[in-house]
Length: 54
Image (cartoon, rainbow, N blue to C red; front, side, top):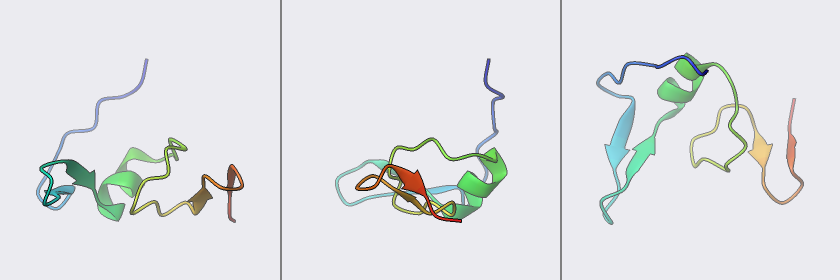
């Protein structure tokens, strides 16, 4: 079971389409890459190569 991370100010913003977009701050707090190709991924994941840049 994954740990629930409480949402705080600065963890996300709403896109013009109304979607929640998580920021780098939230991803670092979560502590791992979900490999979904997130816009602000601090881990360097690339969906094209299916790998994380180190």
